[in-house]
Length: 433
Image (tube, rainbow, N blue to C red; front, top):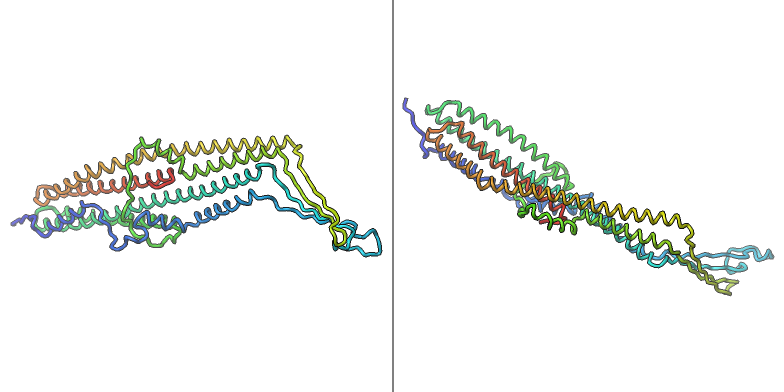
């Protein structure tokens, strides 16, 4: 039997070389006209979610309600008008009793206004202002948490879509390898086992595609839930990742200072502390009495016959009660201060951990890009050339394909991990980087 070697000019060899080149090139994006579609970028998801999330909307309404309480907190109490009908039976004369002011013996009108002690109104307004700031900061904290979750799930969605695209490329490559193996088997150059192994590899890829499609559906459902959409609503495949700034553990101190100023959770605790301090000051001011003043004209018949002035003052006799209230207010200040310190310490710890993890992810991603993938690509090309020339076996070719696939999977993994760590850092800072 005459055996014919398949040269590199063969259509099968050209096809497999093209498939291998595409396989080594990396993810190319599968959407044709989805650049503006929801799901292609994290920014689009964030812009969609912010005005539509119902929980965030409820917190915005609560913050607005708290802001509306500021002005009334510093207002004077409503004035009180008292009307007294005196001698309404007209000394028991023949004139029948009456409830009309001009038909009784005397009618006394008293108009009274309570005047809180010096500085109390301002302190009440400052307490309400601190409550409004706290409600606003809680709204910002809720958005920071929601944004972090959207960014993190989007990164996982990107990784799953990338793995799906990679698996499809492997499936195409293995189909071409099967054709080459079949042709070489028909020429008596290799055993039939090569073609069978290529078919088994394709079956494994199809099974993995099913799992990846299921994972993408789950991630789409999670994203839709965060966007307040129906779980089955369509989302475009992700196209781009946000740029990641180069941050290291040495940046922890400067970033912690930014977090101290901008972190909404810490701002809420600081507003709580300010409110507790103003409430303590208000409790101390309660040692001083409130005043009540009034004017009292008296009517007889249809004429005002006399005028009176009224002055009342509360007498702060219950000193033990006030001292207990003052101790309570001081304890609340201490509790608020401790809570703010605890939140900041927790944020510092989370920031340091995420910075370390981000640095690891970025360095590993760079290593995979600059060393592992180029080396794996050369290995695949070498194994392919050896197999084409009859100097290599199919096992080496499969192993080379698996190595480059593993490298690209690791690249996707570390890219997604860097995005998730960046999302956590941005939540802690209270701003995007």
